[in-house]
Amino acid sequence: MKTAIVTGVAGQDGMYLARDLLARGWRVLGTTRPGSGSSARLKPYLDGVELVAADLGDIAVFAELVDRHRPDAVFNLAGFSSVGRSWGDPALVLHTNATVVASMLETLLRHRDATGREVRFFQASSAEMFGSEVSGALDEETPHRPRTPYAVAKSAAHQLLISYREKYDLFACNGILFNHESPFRGQQFVAGKIVRAAAEAACGLSPTVTLGDLDVHRDWGAAVDVVEGIRRSLTHDRPMDYVFATGVSHTLRDMIEVAFSSVGIDDPSPYLKLEPQMWSSTQADALLGNASRAQVELGWEAHCGFAELISDMVRVDLERLRTGVEEDEQYLARRTAQVPALKP
Image 1 (cartoon, one colour):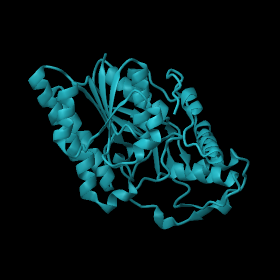
Image 2 (cartoon, helix red, strand yellow):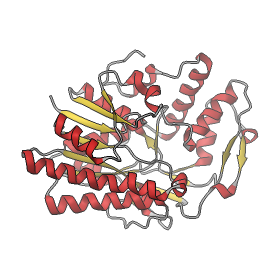
Image 3 (spheres, helix red, strand yellow):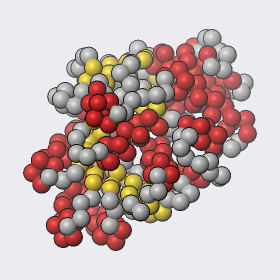
């Protein structure tokens, strides 16, 4: 039985990945932040995962996990995830998203030297690394011009991994993740806010969702598709970096229209509040990905379309509001057909 450590297992990607690995016969240890309540919401879906509260900012904690459990793979999905909020504490963001990754790479290198065992490593990079002045479809060779603390930290970790792979021949892969969503996306993110507002409006409530630029373009995919690429990257025969994206962009305006029309509301304007100052010039107006390398090398492709994804997210939130039950196992079982249904 192979063993994986999935950091950030309480996030949408961590949950999907952990379930996928379990279904394939892996033993899975998932780390959560000590004192965080986020794991409680997804815990019903993590049956079989060995949950460990671990402060990964303390590298001794990660080293002890590696030495004790001797994993075959580490998927690093943890980290500070808000681009906008990264300006509030840049030092924390750089430590969490970059320095910790450097320490992880050092730990895996020392573990290999001491035991002769190779531990494969995946790092979740971000399309935000490319910066604000970009055009066309972006791939693994597109230069980085990060313009936010979040993007700077992600770019630093990305380059560190490449350096360690080239110098020490570590099996380490960066996954450059473009925007991806699921019904388990938190409401602190823009897609979560929009779909919850549509669901609340359908229930006769009067929500208000505050947004900045509605015409910003992003390449939005489904988390379940992205996670399939993440797993394939570490089970491939050689380490590389991969873009995971759909190759199609949509605007926030598109997302709003799909979300509200899915519940029969043709005019969503009464539920919107526009504050242009929310949008920062340091963020790109458009981000579009080119996943050709992942398609050729890994046989990966995105399956879930934009309208289907957003409509499903609204439907799940609507069911949550109507029943008071946060979980929607039917959605999860249908989206990850290879995973047996779990009961909360």
